[in-house]
Structure formats: C-alpha cells, structure tokens
Amino acid sequence: MWKIQTTKINEIYRFTDYFIKDLMDWAIANPNIQCTEFDTIQSTKINDKLKSLAERYEVLRRIMSQLSCAPDIKNISEAYVMCTTCYKDILNGSMNSPLLEAETKTMVIKAFRYFYNYLIDQEYFWHTYNQYDPFVSKSQFRQDVGMKRKVCPYCDASKITTSRRTNTDHFLPITQVPLLGIYWENLIVSCVSCNNILVKGDDFKLPITHPFFDETADHVFFSFDDKLHTIDINGATDAEKNFIEVFKLKDTYKNEWDQVSFTHKLLTKRIIKRFKNTPNKDDIPLLINEEVADYMAILYDFVRRKEYTKLNLEVCNYFKALHLDAFTSYLLFEETL
Ligand SMILES: [Zn+2]
Image (cartoon, rainbow, N blue to C red):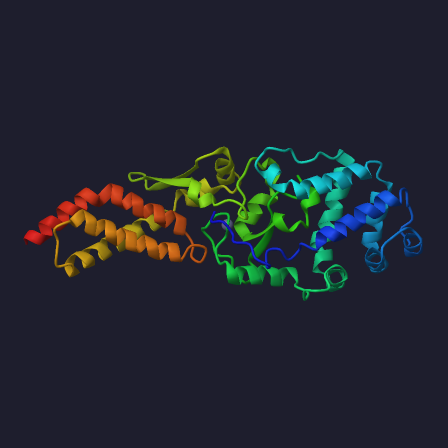
C-alpha cells in the first residue's frame, strides 16, 4: 500500500533481461532445431554465455528447441520486449498485454516457471550472466528485502518476516503475462497471504497501482461503522479500486475494529495527560488537535516498519471528527472540578 523505495536489492534480477534476449535471438537465428543434444546446440550460431548454460542444463536445451521450433518465435520475442519496455503502460491500462496463441502461451508459461523456480536460484546461471554481484539465492533475496522493509506492500497488515513465511509474488501473474516471470519490476516480496491470493489471480484487474510506482496509500480511504464495528476501504480511481479488489483488502480490514478501539484508547490517554500537563487550557480543541498530530507524526515514522500505519492514521482523523466536540466538553467539565 505504501510505495516501495526501490534499491539495488529490488533490482537484483535486472541481469535476466540479457539472458532472455540472448535466448530469443538464438531461437530466431536458428529455426527448427529439434534436437536437444548439446552437440547439436553448440554447432548452431550461439554466444558463449548461452552455450555454457545449454551445456549444463538439459531442461534449458529443451526449452531452446521448443522456442526454435515455434512458428511465432518473432512474435514471442517482440511480446517480451513490449512487456518489459511498456510495463507501466500495461499496469495503467493504456496498453494491453501482448496476446500469445494458446499453445505458445502454455509453452512459455512452462519455460518461465522453470526459469523462476529453478534457474535464477542457480549460482552457475547467476555468474554466467552477472559477473559483478555476488550470488544471492531467492530466499536470501527475500530476507534482504524483509530486513529493509518490514511490512507487506500490498496489505500493510502483515509483516514481511525473514523466515520462510515470506513470498516473492509475481505482480502480473505468470499465468496471464508469463513473459514477465523473471522480470525484476514484476517481482514483489509480500506476505504469504497476499501472495496466495494472487496464485488464483486469473481475475487480475487492470488498471492497477503498483508498489514500485504508486503511493497507493495516499489514494485509498477507510470508513468506520461505529455501530456494527466494521471497517470499509475504498479507492479514489479504478486503479486503486482494482488494487483493493485484487488483494481482497476489504476482507483484510473489515473486522479489524480492535485497531480502532486501541488507537482511540491510546489517544484518550494521551490527550488527558497533555491536558493535565498544560497550564494554559484556553484552547482545548487546539490541545486535542496538537496531541493527535503528535501521535500521527509517530505513526508516520513507523510507515513501512509497523503494520496498520495507514489504517491508524485514518483512525486518528476519525477520532477527531467523532470526538473533538464531546472531548472538549468533557475536558471543560473536568477543569471546573
Ligand atoms: Zn500482505
């Protein structure tokens, strides 16, 4: 929900673009290579990096052969370039993600699942295409992100821990846009429950805000039902509304009334303490506003580090709207005692 300030940690898989480009270029330059034996592959027009990987990984040779035999390999290659160069346009709905024939799509999904599930976790693959950075396993990558940014960028309601209960999520699902399977901007470390929601993401909706590019938290708003003790969340535009829907944030927040009660009690205590410690009690509404503002400043300090900061910031405004007059009367009454 809060925008991620991307660093080198997030961009760790940037080098995979070169691998995919080499792979596509090879398949276009060498059509109809049906044999998956390394001797055949190495006798084709192939660069040294791809050749050394092909020698080592039998599954990669099979994928190379399938791409080489695909009648629409040029379309696949162009679709990859389009997906990666126009990623933001796809997210904001100004461009459709490229369509692949059903058979091609199935083959590409399998290939990119292999790249993501296996290949990018191989030290040999890493050093072949990225000589400059030390190898970082997927689990290490998740831990590094979790150390730097502690709260899930989708829900703001769960910690990204450094344990195994952390996931890297394909923001645009691999089943929908398989060519983005190892594209760094599409890989977001999130909490397990948000990632599991997206596993079922065939109903993924566009346009949508993205944690690397949008401050979604500034454009979603909570509302509170004081009688039913329920919370609702809504977005300003379709992109935020889709973000809320895709990550099922209405379900996440609906029954979190404890957060509201806790913050209300805390603010009440803080305001009474401030009231008692303030010699000049001429302007009680100002005193209340200042105390709430002080607490909100503390919450802002914990953004991306503690859960529910966005919700609790809005609870503060809700508290002021609901209680300012009553609290002022109460404190005025206290003063007369
Ligand atoms: Zn989450």
